[in-house]
Length: 496
Image 1 (cartoon, rainbow, N blue to C red):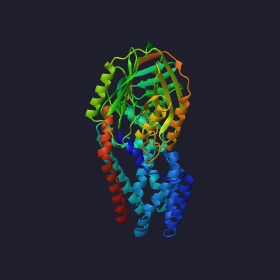
Image 2 (image 1 turned 135 degrees about the vertical axis):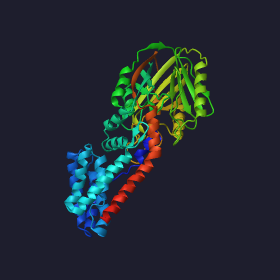
Image 3 (image 1 turned 90 degrees about the horizontal axis):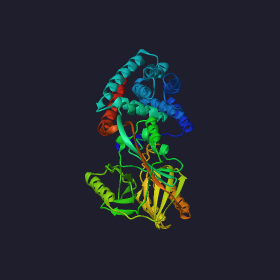
Image 4 (image 1 turned 120 degrees about the horizontal axis):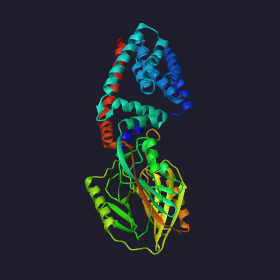
């Protein structure tokens, strides 16, 4: 999924609307001192782009229109000086209007209008015809498929989503290629606190599909715990997330807490909080951890608490995790005479934290644990150790987890995501959370466990695999093809 996500931070960013408009117009005026047609072209592109918003559903705002106007003008400037040709940049404008508009067919005549307005000659008409032909040929090239994925279909959906932040554009694409999957929805209540988990994954990015999962299932007294799963299990749209939420039940059978224990491996640690009917098992990374899959009938949590860039667990590491989980499931544990709990949840947001931080405090006959939850995509290891130290200072052994929430993935251009702790605010938030927990009075409470199943549409392994292959193997050649077509159009325009 990392190749899929990297499309975000490869995109450019530009200044604020007012600044962009002023800079764009000033640059056009300067160039027009050399060739008067430049300011005419700038105005034509600017005004017809505004018209395109109404007529063709062009998904541009003032900032993007200002950038497009000066970009096209600068591209046309050398051709105007060399051959008096205003339309050499027309392939770029054609393809921009095509991919950034909802009504594709109307984008063709609209993108031709600025050039005809500046120079309504036979030469300009010939170049525009050539550009249209080249665009059709390029779209045929782009129409290649990688397994399930048609590249052109994906690019059209992705561009409109990126321009508007409307999830429906990407969700329609994902639904078209999705698979059925039936997964578990789990709820462990401790007093009035809900620990919620599912077999689904909170991705792929921003506000698309399963990226709404954590926010939807994290109510006032609830925290979301990330299960052993992968992006293949991303719900494809908000409707499927609603089905998961509808299947959640938190009034199940009573379970009796037993004494917790830890098992330490070579690369991973397991913390088990057993009950008489099930086991709550946390898998923590010593140096790194990311999505893994293990089969278990118990409540297993992928702590997602040791970020390492471009890391994926290998077969040896998966085997270690499976063995540790198996050992935790089989080890016997003693009864607890006095069990108490406490809960602190704070609304919090930073560049890495999506919505909240929380701590579930548990006391087993005086042995105290804290499940510290960061609503983020993974946790910086240095920061995690700091949080563990903070809670040790107030008498708790902290198990730090993240929700693996992808709401912040691709929230801005040139930024994929930051794990918790990579933002300065996160350290202050962690200290405030520990302070809130320091004086909290714990209460007695009963525990209950509920588990149900729900069938929804997910991305599936085939779509995930094909997306990775397309991003890794086809992206660069197709970008090279685009540049080749643009250069060819420019040179042929000069010759005409």
